[in-house]
Length: 501
RNA sequence: CGAGAAGUAGCGCAGUUGGUAGCGCACCACGUUCGGGACGUGGGGGUCGGGCGUUCGAGUCGCCUCUUCUCGACCA
Image (cartoon, rainbow, N blue to C red; front, side, top):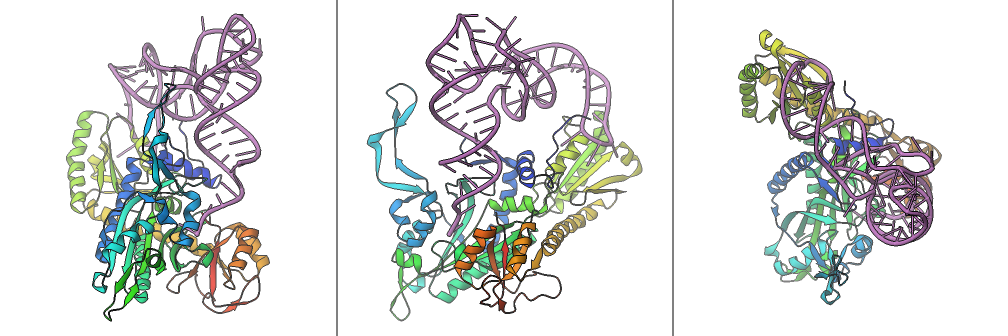
């Protein structure tokens, strides 16, 4: 046995485990630029699956893709007061448009003569540039609604970054819609939250809680922020997606009005919604184990890897006479298969490596199997393997993939349910929050109380959950009225507190 | 921005009192291996983050500087 670096176990150092896994599973790495990551082909393949699945859902709900510029005039950002307040501290600014040779002869310097008339900021989000554009697109109620999405990169100059979870530059999609009525805009924001939740659960196998953000956690410039929240294996919460009802804030800031059927000018109602490469972090921290990544089959770039075990070329040739048709049959069923015939590594290395990369199903076949008409099938989620008859293995694999998809979801849901509890006093809360997980508590609805809790315990309100969530097993009093655990004032329902990423 | 740590081969690291820059992995060649991270032999690869200084001589000592990581602060 050769020496090789095993992952740091989760129990030893969760944060270290995550960092190592991202790099060793070939998902991403640090780049030469602080805070910016290189997403490697394997990681990007997963992101492409995420994109494809989401994009299809956006189209199905009537949205179209467009592209707006990377650079935003500085003055645009300040049009909406809360918006600028939220983002100003983390904007990269373009001030010049030319370099020139350093007179010292060492490299280049910024040409002071090339200073921009108006400085440009690299988008931290695109509401302002989009609403300045929508002004030109909208004049009548007949122009509405506008249902645009864009796939783009954005930049937020974060102090501390972590691959996928918080990077200075990240990839995302941002939907920006314009509506004639408040009701329609709210319905849109809620609909897209539903799309995110369905996608997270069915494709990513991540159970999420749908809810509304408290005022403290609301998007800068929104009237309401809806969100899906997930629980990571260390008991911390991760916001996996948000959808905002923006009211008429941006329409007023950019003077976007339409003439109604009644021939009256009205301001347009807006929403925006987005998910980012942070979902990759959620994916990793929801399912993976000490052996590496665990991918839900619906997202895995390789769903089934076939590893022939051979000594000589003729052994491989013999195996391939059955394995190539098998791979072909699986492809016919729409299954993503790789046959790894490389001689560069031994089978044992390949087994460990595909485990590290989270491939859901591994098939191995050697000379012995060939004689016996059997094949070895191993599943990544349970780390179990079985030797089964070769005949009819395709059907077995197809249903196995579905089993794995369901199992990883169920496992994550069970974990969340086991780590969600009701807490009634602030004293109890201070103790319980140290153990991690979601705490369901009564809160008086004031930012002051939330702030106090945050200062004293680091926990924040992740969301005010809506009723269509599985939050708890059995009896609970989540949606009953009660008294705030801190102030004793009345509370309409319990909210979710947690330490968040 | 505060505290700590670290920059030496592609990666991970060692380098004692200042004296010709090394190890493991990876890479290349050949051979043996191959059912859970194989092995042997041979080979290629370096501006020791950068600058200045001390010294006959600096990876090593001093000063300056740049960068990265971890933990805080910050994070709509």
